[in-house]
Length: 374
Ligand code: ADP
Image: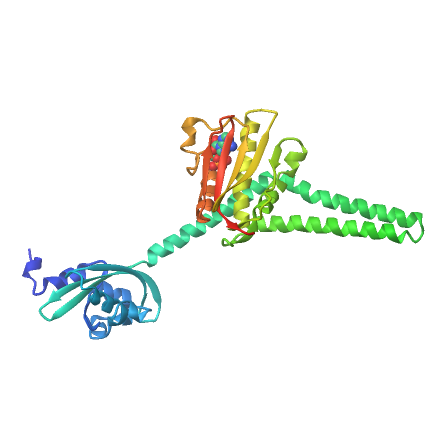
């Protein structure tokens, strides 16, 4: 067998460096590159000859991040032990000018000819691309979930749009009759009727606008929103169920102007999910008296929004699985609603939890950070 063992080789360090998966760059205290392993050559697209002798800052988009200027001077100044490591996240630059994310760890070794710095560079491109993909999938899931819920609430939504349209038609008819009866019509009455038509048209347009927002895709867009408004917009989606007496929904708007810095559609999605779940649980248990109460409790720097129903509640065994993806007890359930809601709450610096009220039923508490005005 004609295989060299490491100790047989002239420079075992070279062999180790070239076998390393991560890029390894060795430089001196002036930042001059002394060694540039094979992985570094592939990553930065420089040959060892091209890289050696040049300043290591060549490899970073922020030239001060690794070279003599900022990073190493600080490192040398700390006077720490002989081999100290620092890990930084930086942006690397390849020879073709393209940039990529990386982690950089640098350790110092004292040699005969002064300090040597060994930097190990790990390419984060794939990791970051994976994270971006997960974020994109989460967005898609959120969007799909909203569409499913909207689909399930079609009756209520149709009702909401139908109401102003019916009113517009009725007012237009009334106006027509008035004109027919009085020849030229009574200008005063016609004026009032035209105003009512305009008002109802605006209402219908608002509903459509709200729905368009709900079905929109895209990134989270946080802004300052009034807490009462978000809750009232949620309740509007259950207008049909409320009018048909399938559900009693109580909410007393809070007096203080509590402002949330949130993506209103996403918070609305959480609340719609919670109300819908309560309604599903109460419908499944066959009870006639279906009540949901939404309360806002201001607790210092955060606000708790409690959504409570008088349904069957969640069994002790199911409670610990509630927020797990794909946990469902419904015949046609997907089991993503609550886990998505919890993620949305967390992305807003808040939380979603379950409580079992002493009087029975279920209570979900959405906690969100508050921006208080006045
Ligand atoms: P899905 O609605 O598709 O089942 P969720 O994640 O929204 O998914 O809910 C998971 C499970 O949590 C439900 O299947 C149900 O068993 C339980 N659950 C959620 N909300 C309530 C509630 N208000 N009352 C009783 N059980 C509930």
